[in-house]
Length: 243
Image (cartoon, rainbow, N blue to C red; front, side, top):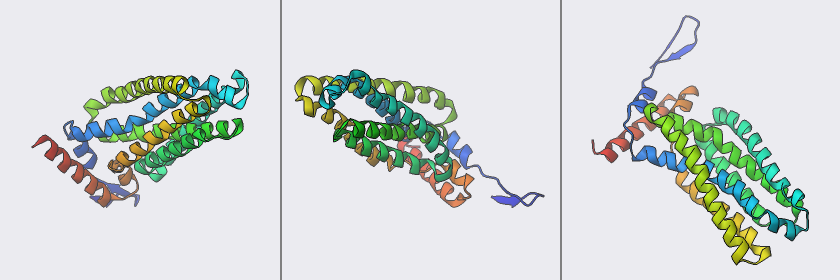
């Protein structure tokens, strides 16, 4: 419902967001949480993975250990830049478009990291991989806060950040061990990076089912689209819980 105030500014009165907040916690909300947890999982995976193959990379490209750490430093710098840049763009372009785009950026450049032809190309690709990972934060955190019921947000946001990172580091340690101990020196570290790219493809496919944020749609005046999404979520939750 819309009307105008005395200044001529359009005022929107809607209960869409309240309807989302009133929904009981359901399998739909668990899916949103698990799918978006991938941001922190991949961050933990990539940060730990590169550290695990650092010595191998130094040998392959015949550089010092200190020089090889530049890839990790640039990854972290890229993540900081990506978080700031895509945090702003999430408000301009929408949550879903951003978390679909950032996972593609991550997947593309971690795959390119696996086929790096020299030290310079590897450090550039690690930087751009970090940009993709950092870009996930703003859109992902916003999506959780806008879809998960208020009474559940704190608990699950903590789960996403903590569990996502921890599981990522554990998986990365196992991958690094396998790559270093079981595969030839020129292949193992490349396979390790390819694992992240393959995971990114699965995450991208699953994320397609997560709807756009109704709050963002309302902020852009796209009221009918927001109404449709809220109604779809309500029907889905109702069917899942058998109410």
